Every structure is written in C-alpha cells, then in structure tokens.
Length: 152
Image (cartoon, rainbow, N blue to C red):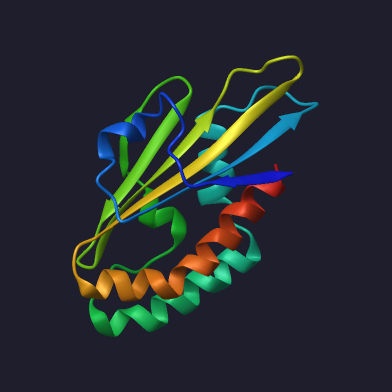
C-alpha cells in the first residue's frame, strides 16, 4: 500500500532545498525481492514510464510548447539532472522559466525482509505561470507517483 505524507523524510538530501511552495512524499514498503537501489528506482520511474505517463507527457508537451517551456520525453528531461546522491538516495532537479522542482528517490536499507521506498517532490514557483501550471499538473503528478510505487 502506498502512503502519502507532506513532510520531507528525515535525513533526506532534499533538506538543503526546503524553500518550496509545495512538498509531497509517497512511500511504500516493498518485500519479497532483492534490495532496490536508487538507480534502479530512477530507471523504473523515468526511463520505463507507464503508457499513461508517456501519453500525459506527450499531451503536456503539446500544451506547453507555445509558452516556451522545455519539452521532450520524461527520460530526456531528467537525463543529467542529478543534483546530489548518496548510496541510498538520488535527487533529480530541474529549473525552467515557470518553476523549479526536485524529486528524491530514497531507498531505505532492507529490514526484516522489507524495504521502504520513498519518492518526495518539492516545487518552487519561479513566477505566476509556475503556480498556474502546477495547479493543473498536481493531480496527474500525484496519480503517476502513486502508480509508479504501486508497480514496484
């Protein structure tokens, strides 16, 4: 079961980026498999997105192109955007005209046969367009993060 929280997890590398307008964290306890690494989690979410995520990204790119916002595949948008990393976490970030965001992929050590995986997102609006943009994106963001964790 995926759980939602609005707080950045303790000891997350995201702590250095906490001046944000929006924060969410979704986590899931995963068991019965090898320990998941942050790199594997990044691959699963960003380089092998679900058909729904791919379709939504295509629609998003069509809608935002007239505003001069960055477009492209999810994989291309996160490539070379790693802000920081540790053995247990990768933080990916991106700054565009309208907003700045960072996503933490945190994989706790396996404990008693299960492992807690947490995906945390923080967003800072660079201008009014960012706030308007994220108002429309937020429901899809929540859906896609939740589904990504559920398929682990």
